[in-house]
Structure formats: C-alpha cells, structure tokens
Image: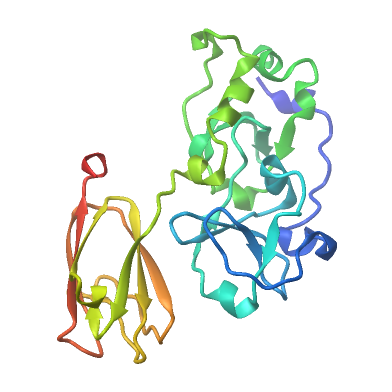
Length: 276
C-alpha cells in the first residue's frame, strides 16, 4: 500500500538546528556539560544531546528535536572551545512511537522503533489502528540525507499485538524515555593519566564491556597520547586537561602506550557484554 497517496501535505522543513533554535530560549550562562544535558555552543545554534558514553549527538532538524522535547528551556550553553572538546557520536533519531516517517524517494511509511529501526506500516488499517482516523497527519518527511541514520527492520505486524494496536505508539514511547535508552548508551569508563602513569599508579589494567566507551583524561602537566601497540587506534596528542573517548566494540585485550613516553603502558580488557 502507498500511504503517501492518502497523506495530507506535510509542512516544509523549517531548517537544520543550526538555524532554528531561538536564542531567547537558550540559557545565556556558560556551564559544564553532564550526561543527559542538552547543549549548544555560543556561536552556532545547533543543539546536541550529551550522551552517557561521553559523546555528543546532534539533532539533525527541528522535527526530530520536538519528538523528544517540547521547548528549548533546558538547553545549556557551553563556550565554543568547551563544546569542541566533546567528540561527536552521531545523530539523534526520532523518538520511537511519536510519528511515522517516510522519504520522498520511497512511498513506504515507517513506524520508528528503538535504536532508529524502521518497520514498514504496510496497510492503512494498521496506520489507523495505531494513530486513529487522522493517521495521515502523523507522518513526517525525512530528508534523504538523514535516512541513513535509520535501519530497516521487519514489516510491522500488528496481528501479534495482544493489547491492541492503539497501545503500540504509547508503549513504544514509554520503552524509550530518553535518548540514552533509545541508543542503548552506557556510562564511559575512565583512564586518568597522572604521575606519568596510566591510572595514576593505582593500576594500568582496565576492564570494560564490549560496546562501552573509554575516556582518557590527561591530568599531567605534560602532553601524552594513548596509542595502540599495533597502531590500530590512538587518542592523538592530549595536552593537560584534554581528553579523548573511544568505543571498544569487540571483546579482547588491547595494549597501548604513550608515544611521547614509551615506558608508560596500559592494557584494556574488553569482555563480552553479557558477562560484565
């Protein structure tokens, strides 16, 4: 079924978040960022979500933002320099259950589930069962360039739902109360570099679960790196107070050293996620 033929006209996109955030809704003070915060810099008005994993995630447009938040009152302003120290982790996707989405080059309409997984709503009956008679007003067009943020899952099968199709959108929203939940983000582990040692002398071995991030923080007065012994990854030069976050997705043992001080060494043991 081509739901597009039955859909009402969708309002044109207001623009990327680099343009749409009114400064009046943003706090003027410069603050530090904490996990779960909404943040932006002083020069550009793009808004980001500060993840538990130490990365920041950008809202690609206003429509995406308003599936998660009703206004900009919680957005905190950071200095441009402080914002630049937080690495990008990717884009925020629509909050599951709030809206259905489609793209111009694909007539199919999709229901959004956790992690940006899309499930094709193959019949008008299913669409009406979830969103009521005005289901065709609950469809947003997503620019083709942003569609890559999502993955295509199985066709939505409401015949398997025992509590009724109308409960599916609300239950899906309740299952993803935050962007952290939606993306399955976990708190980062920390490697403090101090006293010319990884771990500051407490230990030079660190254990995390597969998929978890490690944040290296240089607390020494001299520059350091954390560089894989096989050169497969590295933090680059970190001056005093600087940090670097890396996600370790595959279990195994990772040895590393400081390129400036080769006698500084460390080991990261990445365990299977279910055993952590």
